Length: 215
Image (tube, rainbow, N blue to C red):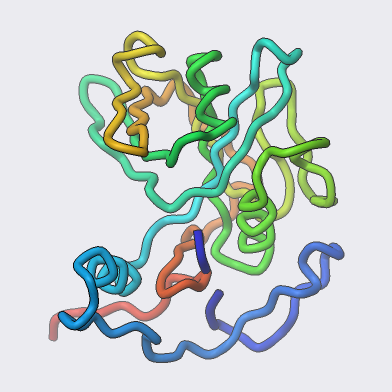
């Protein structure tokens, strides 16, 4: 995932992880789709023009005494609300977080704040699950017994279980990705602050900005 944006020029210094994050003025897109590029690159350029939600997904690996696996992702979306709420996202394989989701049949999606604290959390979990604790170096966030991240930059958490049979029903392989479909079983307030969540476009984390309204 690639990703930053503006609302004020002040730096946020609540922890060492946040000290390097700040807001800056919005700029025009750096990408411009052109038919001279190969089709995959054309699509990549088009998708960079669209804002995507940024969340962190965690799951506990049952065969390693509940070791936490985590990843930042921008493919998360709501699928349906009835008869029970379903959410979905996709994961490139191989993935240790996906392995944990498959083994446990459960995962938690964390809605991040649209500010420097949220961007710091998102950036932290882009580094993967290799070696040590996935929380190492993230001073302002801890994980509770249910696998929910609690601390600065996390607004809400959605506790989910994989739809149907964890090995098949809610996990659908498409080429080198797996589509995950999960049923939301609980919404957990963390910071519970008002405000929009973190988004990502044109290789930067961003905040939701101005509103377009009809006269």
